[in-house]
Amino acid sequence: MNFRHTLLLLFLLIPICSLAQSETTDTPEEKQTLNVYLDCRGCNGSYVRSEVNFINFVRDQSDAEVHLLVTLQQTGSGGWEHTLNFMGQGFIEDKSQILTFVSPKSDTNDEMRRRLVKHVKLGLVYFLAGREVLSDLNVNFSGSLSESTVVNETDPWNSWIFRVRASTDFDGEQSQGNLRLNGNVDARRITDQWKINFNYNQNYRRRSFTSEDSTGKETTDIYITENQRFFGLQAFSLGDHWTVGAYQRAQSSTQNNIDLSIGATPSIEYSLFPYKEFNRREVTFRYGILGSYYDYSETTIYNKDEEFLWRQELTIRTDFTQPWGGIYGWLDAGTYMHDFSKNRVNMGFRVNMRIVRGLSIFFSGRYSLINDQLSLPAGDLTEEERLLNLSQQATSYEYGGSFGFEFNFGSVYNNVINPRF
Image 1 (cartoon, rainbow, N blue to C red):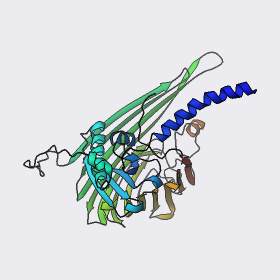
Image 2: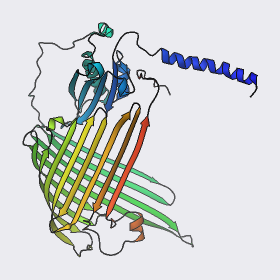
Image 3: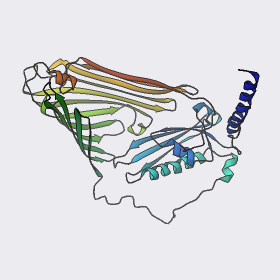
Image 4: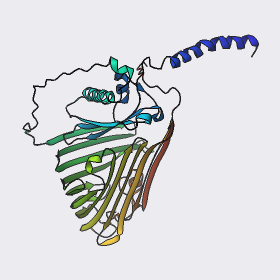
């Protein structure tokens, strides 16, 4: 490259550098305000940043004076309870507050996100004392002190919620086709004392394969798998830490060689922390004994066509949501009472964690020890059953996992939302 080309390149770079510099230097606020890190888990963070314009949103937690952690939990009526945890950092670390509100199921997505913005604004005002921007804020009251709210309004449904869903999808080409049908019916009633849930799910899949022999004659092979499941739950609260109840389960599955299985599980659960703290931390232990009747489609490898079995089950759940990230883990263990060697253990975890400024990692894993495949059919599987997973196959374990990271650097400010392109 000669000198003239180098000089031309420099002239082209000058406007670009100037533009980049102007984008950076124009960012700081004109009035003293607050730096906030929005940690929005399950909500529309972009909308919040676009609507709350009197503070600075920063990209990294270490640049923030307030860490705003937003978590969601579904309510018994199908709506969403939002918990907004405002945590001061640095010289205002002694300041914090928690706001909660419920967005009912009747809310549209727009109504729900506007409720969220309203409560974010209300919570931030507490931290703006002594900031210049506070003088430009106005408070509007749209209600009336003389109005009364009907708390115990008569509910003709007695807190019951019902949902019916159905779907289908299909695809194909010249030599094959797929058809899937799915249906789901759900009924639930959730109050402070009771949690009742009934769910029925059906999945149907039809696969067809067309082939042509040497004479030009076409043949079509059709393979169908179908699964039906019913799940019932009744749980009664015994206080902040204990719950008693029962599960009911019914199933039919062509893949699992089950014409019908039906059973019930009386259970008891203990929560290490009060249930009301589930948004931040949760450790629960559940124990139950399942009694089930099985009617098999084909004779099993244990020479059974039907049988009644007792099985004990232990479930452990942990879930911690913190400013630095979150950890979720579970362990499900069960063994048949007639033979403890017939058992299964499922375990797994999910972690998302902030390591240093701008760097976060996330990883998950799961592993199962399987020694209880009592419904395996006798005899060998066909090639089609193996390749198309038409029938369950013998195994002693399963595993899976994922890992990833995210690294951010650049301007600390994150206020502007630009939807173009």
